[in-house]
Image (cartoon, one colour):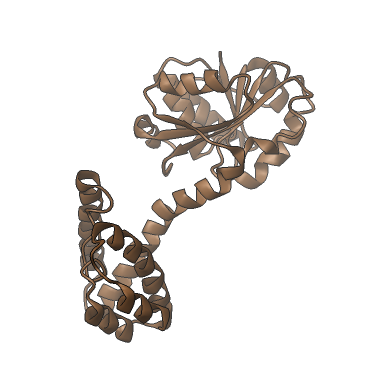
Length: 281
């Protein structure tokens, strides 16, 4: 099986280099930016295509690695071509393979293949892809074959139902992108306390890194510490008194989730007073 890519951005480069490093044959890249396609082809030791039709004709498996809002546009071009027996994939976390409308009538097989992974670099992210969980959904016919492709590379895989893609992607945003927002919020408040930005970021990184390390070592429930876990109503009340309305809204929402975890850790504790405090602020 050989693989071609439509879209030469970070995701296309990352998967392409990952495959090339693992001796999976690549045909090459097409992109509306020919320079980007050439760079990707050079990076992955594959070919440059100047038309979608030639890339599709030459490839058994085609990855559409464009932005989410371009996937359907590309598919509308691809589905006009001969794709009988070909595997068509996209790498969106939020979209399912349902976007490949009419693919069964064309004799093709559609899949969404998404790494639970933050792809931040065209040229370096492939090095971390080995550790990523790959979620897959799509046509039944080659589902096992696609899964075995990634299992053979050493990845853990998870077959997901197409109806759960949006919720799955929201979970990924909570655990990745919104962590950056929390880091930003903590940094801003430390700056209000007189920290320099570098001091604040360094402090936040230490705290967040320690929390993640504790989750890994002790598990999610046992890793929980702090005033909510201790049922320290007085401290939480003082926090709420000094935070801005926007900061307070975030603090309350997250603290409610912390109470759920705290109840699991400390079933003997009564968190009613703390819950009431959060509910009425």
